[in-house]
Image (cartoon, rainbow, N blue to C red; front, side, top):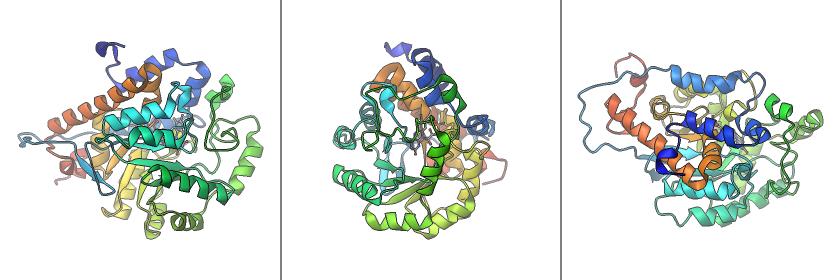
Amino acid sequence: MQETDFPACLADLASAARARLDPGVAAFFDGGAGDERTLRANAEAWQDMTLWPRVLKPLTGGHTRTTLAGCELAHPILVAPVAFQRLAHDQGEWASALAAAAQGAGYVLPTLSSVPMERVAEAVLPEPARGPLWFQLYWQADRGVIRALLQRAEAAGYEAIVLTVDAPVQGMRDAERRTGFRLPAGISAVHLSDGGRGTEAAHADAATFCAGVAASAPTWDDVLWLQAQTRLPVWLKGVLHPLDARQAQSLGVAGLIVSNHGGRTLDTAPATAQALARIAEAVGPALPLIVDGGIRRGTDVLKAVALGARAVMIGRPVVHALAVAGPVGVARLVRTLRDELEMAMALCGCRTLADATPALTSLKSP
Ligand code: FNR
């Protein structure tokens, strides 16, 4: 793909991906739960927030750098865990991780990766400009399986565990059901003995599946157990309620990812922008927050930071970019979002991300 052919913005990237992907795969990537209210609300909530620019501020020496978990990052953009990325590109998670690292973006590898975690780590760790490399954990009924995953992640060089807590059962995603989507032969969750066929991509017997998975869903006690099993910091992903955020904080988690799974689990759950503002207020500045869901513009990233997020994650745009232009596409995607963020910062009078405060999105004086 020529430099000039790459889609101008993330919405164009999504259209280009849809034109290339098999309809079932497109439904798996893009679909949301139920009537997709939360899916739409995520993007709309960022779009609907107003930015109140400040003018005539000195911008010399401005930058997008931030710190997260003790690391300095070139910018506050991470790649979210997205299952089965080989559906978008033959090299799957290896390709997206390599591109993210080259662009200084953090990377969260899913339990349901279609590429082994060691291969992904080998691609990422030597990159000097890389962001953090984390492993996302879906709770497993057998604790021996969890221990083995943790040991593998630690040995391979992953730097934190992200426990996803918003999917004790998976959402009803009608688009997938309509297309009859099934994982094609040759693509599976390589870390799990059943290849992940009982998880993100299974619909044949939803009721049995729900009963089985719910019975082994994690609880707050399991978070403590998990923290005791690993020397790595543990983040929770999928927290929306401020009371849950407070409880997580009291357990000493490393941070929270304010997320509704991209609107794929509980429909009519709040948009993440809405939840972020409340959680930031509930936990104060000491607990690092990351937010994801519907982040599609640099202005969205700036708004998230203004509301109290240390960083953002992007999910669907990454698989869109993989489908359109492989690893080069993912690199271009991160660069596009970062460029947009830089422009938004300059236009709002923010020299650094520390200048993005709640006052930027309201008329309250700073
Ligand atoms: C996801 N997400 C996800 N989350 C997780 O913790 N483990 C997983 O395996 C997956 N798998 C997955 C597959 C697909 C196709 C999508 C679209 C999403 C959720 C993901 O990490 C993130 O929370 C959302 O994608 C963020 O929203 P946007 O950026 O896609 O709007």
